[in-house]
Length: 356
Ligand code: AMP
Ligand code: MG
Image (cartoon, rainbow, N blue to C red; front, side):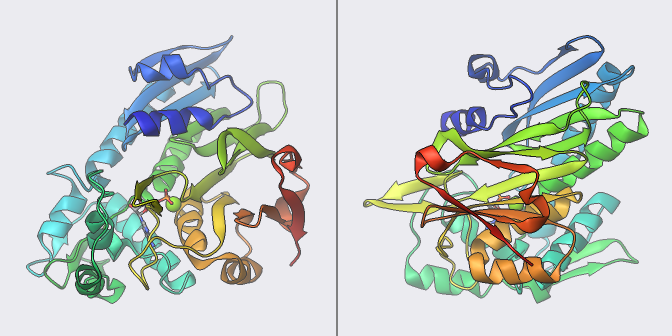
């Protein structure tokens, strides 16, 4: 828990001084008025600290509703809570279809789309493998080859059936399970953004454990400034993005990992091998108006590596990417190049723009 807290504190939204780690360390729920007609709330949900700030007449009430919405979604998507819909789907594996809510259905269908787009690199049926590495319960362990070979037979996206008419989900093989950890926060940020906009909020910034969603502009009329962390040194950042009405979501092996026998093992698993993905990337940041897609893609483009990820970007038109490679390169796709201020020279990074 302590490690996660520290990581969170490093993710700075430079428009605000949200890096007050001592305050965050209290982990207390806190809601109150911010400067002038703004409000902010801090809460712990989905295994991470979330900071929401909104401006406008209904800011305080809207954030209270946003907080309720986050807890409602957490109750559906949590893999560790005994009564969540995800747990019920997992317990029903090999037995029976489970009735699901509209939210779970939408999320499972989005996961399916991203699975197809990424040729299987994003796969929520990776759950048994993630669990074997100990990332589900944070009891870390390096699984042996036989164990992984067996578990990989349970990673099978085609054996998850979502029935759109009956609103059910069914894992066809016993032992299968789904893990929405790679996409749930992005979906939640989309729902909260929608809720705040419906309530008339035109200026807000949400940080769901470092997954940032910006609504409108800052009160001074400028874009929101989102710092992108240096994966090699979490106290630094490699640049700042200026965004409006977009999500900025980063995945990287540096965010959750453990060391065993001098080797680092992180939490983003390649479904083809069952091992933490090692494709030459340190982090992938996706910028998109669709937070759900941004979250799923940040995880899976990290798995795919620079070349294949760039191919996907070239054929898509609804997201942009910042790659940080293990060769100390920061590569930014051309659609956001003019919104990105590169600041990684002093840490030894070089900078380039990827053209379409
Ligand atoms: P993120 O922080 O969004 O990159 O998500 C990482 C989380 O997604 C991990 O902690 C796992 O719960 C889950 N995960 C790991 N590998 C994959 C994968 N290849 N596809 C889908 N989810 C994954
Ligand atoms: Mg993700």
